[in-house]
Image (cartoon, rainbow, N blue to C red):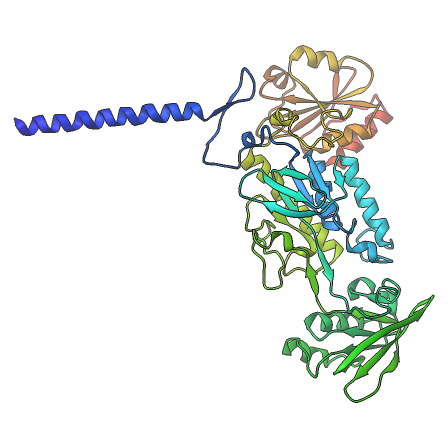
Length: 502
């Protein structure tokens, strides 16, 4: 009987303990709720720092901070702003990056010939057209001890960034000799792939003894008559297989123990170099091009203590995500280790990094369209278009508003149906701008205004309906086919009597 009594007593204590735990847990849960307005409560896990709620009340808030304004930074800005993210670009010491030092670019797809300044200027205007903001400042430090991350600048600004894309690039090592800076872009180059075709039938030199120098020489051999590789010591640092490979090129010569003392030239560009070695006095070698391949210096000093770098101080990234060792921080372009340093590569890596970054903001941070207004007081004050873009697609919330807009006037009316799970792409406002005074664009939450969805048989999202005089004249479910949609609208405008269904 005593045994039963002890068991009963133990069970009573256990039940009481469980009740107390449940009570404490419920109180804790209640305290973890953050209220946006009087009607809506969002529960947040206090242990999970990547939560949009934690961005409330922060000053100088930015969705995506892009550090660097070369092709990678500009590409990231274009993709980020096009997705309607609040993106700020810190331009750095060289706005536009390395292409601004290149006289001609002829290997950028779709643009046969353009100067470097012209290319980056076009890219910048495109980013600004989508709403990206630029600041003539440089990043000096990033604090990742809390989120949003704090970004400090040379000009004394402090920003709170929900995500960061680093595109600060590299600086080619220079020889530091007379004539080098004077003739840069007029015979002095750091990129055989970029400038090799301009030296057909000419004599050129490559300065350096590593793998990159041999790669430069082999590429130049396709164009130049003679390529002379100048090695400072009595042997190359390049891998043995690279040295063996270069032996198969009859127009490549190697000079060891040779140092460039000066680069010579005139108004037409480089005409020769002054050289010296261990045995002979200084002499002049006539050449038209000087390609310097003695390595690059990555601009990673400001992140060396927070992000994993490789042996060359380039940023390590995870697979094809371009995410660094710190979640929410990405890298693209020349700053990434192990990739070919070309404009096309920079643009491609930035596009991929921005896509993954955007998913991070949506899926992990919870930064969806319905929360953006809640952060309006926190955002960086110079986001000029914030909340005031005349082409921002307005939301239809009631059936009466829908009917009013559809039958309001003779303009085409485009209704974009979406759900919270399938948000609208940022291109809608861009298309709206293209059809100003010809069509009006709206968006409709298919779940919240379900009677409208049912009436027009919208069974999947996203879905775009085009109305003319109150009747549907076009339907589109593939939002990625923007060109196809524009062709449909153009056809309707051209012939208002044509009924197009797709």
